[in-house]
Image 1 (cartoon, rainbow, N blue to C red):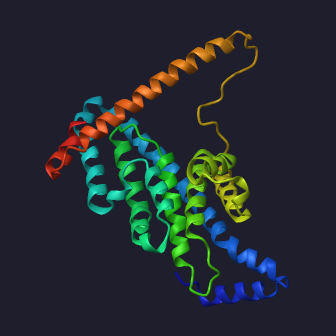
Image 2 (cartoon, one colour):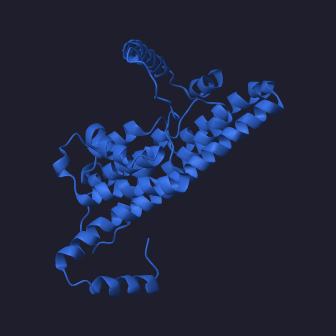
Length: 290
């Protein structure tokens, strides 16, 4: 996507004015990460606003008549499924597995596969289908989708870099995009960095470049400044608690761990059963039945 000539001239003048060669090189390497971070933060904020409006639409329909959902829910589920199936099959689900696969496939041989997993089409279909599902009352979140959306943004910026531009690692861009998406979704820049290190890259902290870390921080701060601070699970009051409460917390943690693992097993079983649905009619009836 070429820049306007006037803007390109101004940027070149400012760039040529920098005397230090190393600073010039580092600036060019970091610039795609910073641009992607700002765009990701803005898109994440817009997505959060749209998500809130979709939830408000659900509440409005409920106050009109709860019985409306006997028709609205299956229609929205079917519409959301159709959008994904028709326009971007790889936008289904949370989006995190697609990002992990894209990171593993970031090499010239599998470039076309990464383009299927992360693209502008995935961004639009991901946002639109999830909003339709929310209106229908689906229990879904925007955090996983935001990660795939952000990784798609960073990947697309990497694609748009001109041939003369210094080579920027596509893998690092996708990793940063995923971490920036998490930082923007939860307003937690440090959480995005930890996510990038522990959940996606599996590499040591020292291998990360400053451009990657600052990109995650910029994305998180952009969302933080526009949405304001918040705790994802609310604001618990932890003062004046007795010391024995720790034993209650341990018991709840153990029970929650067993419940969560059982839930995961049940979901995996359901997915295996769902995989048996092969015909288009069966796949269309599945969301309607749900």
